Length: 74
Image (tube, rainbow, N blue to C red; front, top):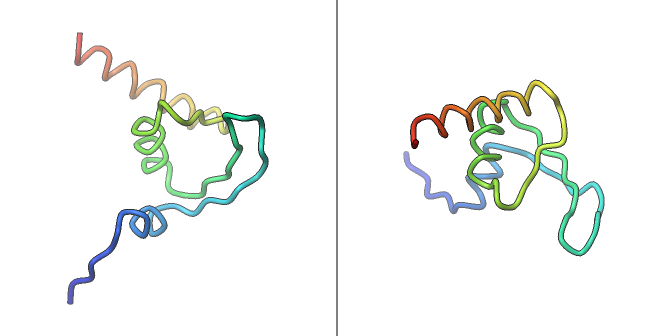
């Protein structure tokens, strides 16, 4: 049996998130729960709109992935 899932539903299946606080006119803080690899991909895909604040190991994974992409596309 196959099930059609809209994009928003797909995101909800992969990650759970909740609003934490309104920071200013541009930024809100949200808490996201998902597996690390999904978070890395989502953060890079959404990099114009998000910054991962915690945890340092996750931030390091994102930095390393970006460095690898930079090398690939030189």
